[in-house]
Image (cartoon, rainbow, N blue to C red; front, side, top):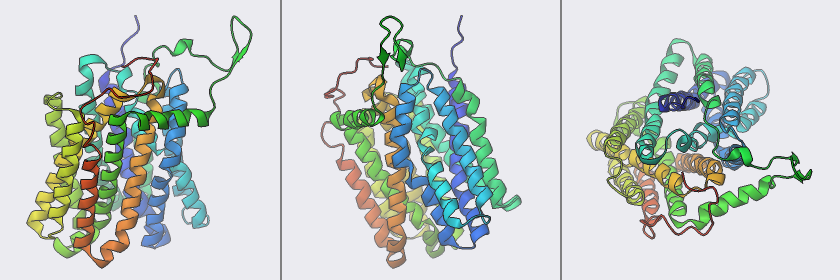
Length: 413
């Protein structure tokens, strides 16, 4: 009898990969600054490894959707991502910096594997009434990774230096490889046509072109109102979160007694997000996902507006409030994707959504830099307005799961 893939193995793999990803950003910044001596050069490494996700996500999704064993290409993507981090480290200070940035950009193409690529496989591990609880646990791995990753990066850099911190981040991603490789097969894929001669007719059966499948995935997102609005809301909120992240150092300098202390706000937000998702694990069906997304965006908007006061007490409350909005929003977003994604396009929808969020975060951080230099409160109020716009994206069609215009021949999970 075939053994069932345990949920704890899925969660352990997801947590290791995501902690490595969260660790890699600060570690790359520190290693880049050590090697190049310039904050601008160091930040360009982080920008390179995040901005390219918009291109890599849809293509990676096609590969996962086509695979009879999606865990195999997912494991290869994780391995290549870890190898890319090693290549960035190996070329720092040895080759022209532009070459190192190019390697970071190529590595970033695989970034959505660590987020959407994992989560897309969850219905193959659990199904039915167990899925909402498992979905909340999956979202909690992001919160735990957000706590553990930066802390590990800072501790490793303090004890060993920036380059060894990058090595440890790559190692954590490598630890997740067995869990990815062993993920269950996609149901019904044994009968899916593959290139080559047909067993009965002798004809060559061809898979649809990659571009056509990417277009089909994009149409599935756009044509399903609930999925489209949830995706748009999450991306807009990520823009606001990127703006806040870019402001943490000046917030720390102006209000908390040191630039480094601004990172404490992100730590507090991660703690409260984790606590809020723990409540959702206990009560997984208390509200519709669209309602939670809308409320989460509004709570984040209120938190960012409160942070604009630049006073220590309100800043701490704002950070905790931010996590209360952010954590459940992520869980609800996953619930919408699991409900709305056709099985044959599931990987694309999850990786495309992840790539859009990563890119939105990068754009927010990029835009906030020069704005924060002019007016820090004004930048935070602008971020609050952006998050409020994310809430508006779910104001119509918020409760209807029906409404898709594309049939799902594979059925629902």
